[in-house]
Length: 451
Image 1 (cartoon, rainbow, N blue to C red):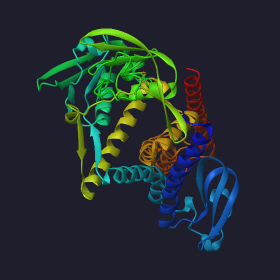
Image 2: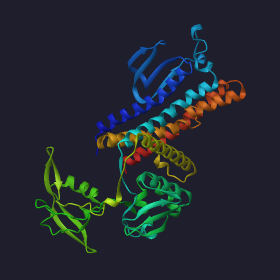
Image 3: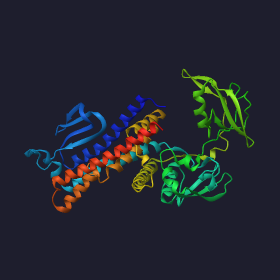
Image 4: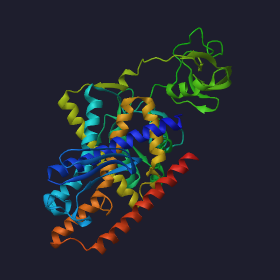
């Protein structure tokens, strides 16, 4: 579990990077369009670092509250514009230029996601073929006839080869009518069609972390079948044998070797009950978990090994040329953007759970966990949240870029700006909508903490 400090530092880094990207889009396009920039701030509130530079002496700031940022343009509605700056205020520039500036923030978020995915894919990627792992008896997956090792070739009419696209397709099919048609290939090469039918349970299954447990299967990973029993392990003298599949340790369900490692590492020296399956029959054994010291820290050691025999068919390394990786990055960004828009729309209609709305607490936890796992994971999270930030800012809410674009379109159609009263009313409605959204987000964050 990540520490509070790790979460905090990772969260500040994530927000600062994404806000800088978003606001830089507004800033640079504003300059290209001949506007005068008064201030570029990362964060809100009192500046803790300030620098002035450029011919306009723009004030660059890092402010105390790292939850956003802004670019302040010269604007005749906020004060007198000097003769030397006449025509350079935001509201004095042509409407297409203003719309370009407002669109630039979200556009830079999407461009950043493309760049992030390009970096991650440039050296090639190792993927696990989307396939079915352990299937829970009586579950939707079991009723549909899914079996361990089944490769998922397509979801509905969409061919899939990676888990991200598979999840997007499964959720897309499920929220439509509660049915998910799958084309499968069994371990012996036989192809067949199966349908997951969740009926009216579809909204619950869209809650965070519920999908696979709710459907009743986990993504394929090497099962926890013992292939080796080293001489220095506690398992050797316990009665466990090569070929046994471990199903639980100390009451913790074990579906694969990752689960096994997670269960064993914190239990050094503990007496535990291990349940396993041998030749189709369940059994159990009591033993004391061994201990090994790694980097000065005592960790649990069971002494079982696994084999990659038969697993190679589920792993695939994709090597891209620079152009191919760029194309793949664009496609992945587009897919994630469409998926985000669709899921947000489904939240409005009630087909997708609003528990998916995350606030700063959950984002901080995700950022901290990804940072601990390595820079690749952190960059991947940056890309995902950057896409979400770009989509949300295009919503036609007055305090967001999308709402300001609506104002500009109305001005173009009317031939005159909206009245001050109408703009104030719009801002009040926008602030109310954002407060409501933030309330949902904080409620969901707190609920997850105490779940």
